[in-house]
Each structure stands twice: as structure tokens, then as C-alpha cells.
Length: 96
Image (tube, rainbow, N blue to C red; front, side, top):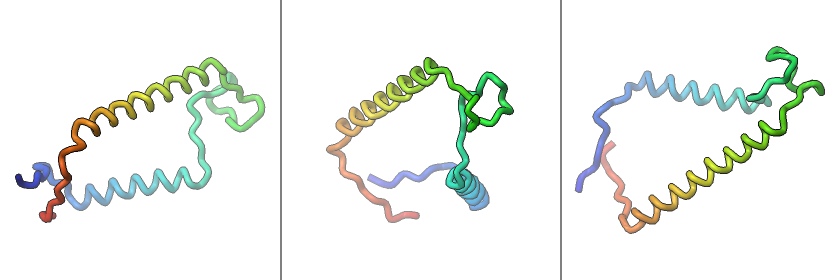
């Protein structure tokens, strides 16, 4: 059995651009920037850290349940696939 190589070759420029984008996103988050998905009733321009910025508890509860459901499904899918293919050995390829 041979190694499979992608037919689409990504140029070095595209690889560099994608690496810079991912580094930029990680650096932005590491500086303490936060993403807010729910804006307060005072408008989108209001400071999310102000005491007047309130989030509807129903929305938070729904988001929490949804995220837990997504994670649960992903873990179950991973477990099913892993058990199905766990007996197949991994073969490394020497071709770059």
C-alpha cells in the first residue's frame, strides 16, 4: 500500500499567509481581548465591561446547552470512528 498525497499543492506563499493569519489571531487573543457574542440593550457601541451591560440568562442557558450538545456529539462521533478503525495500524510515509 502506498502513501496518498494531495493533488492540490499549496504554494509556499499561501502557507505563509495562513500561518501569519493564525499567529495574528492567537496574538490578538493573548493580549486580553475578549469576544462578546451578545450585546447589551444600550446598543452595540456600549462598553461590554460596564455594569449596565446585561446578558439575558435565557440566551446564556441556551448557549451553554447548545455547546454541551455539540461537544457531546463530537466526542461520540470521535469514539465511534476511533473504535471502528482502531485495529488499522498507522504507517508513516517517507515521501515529503
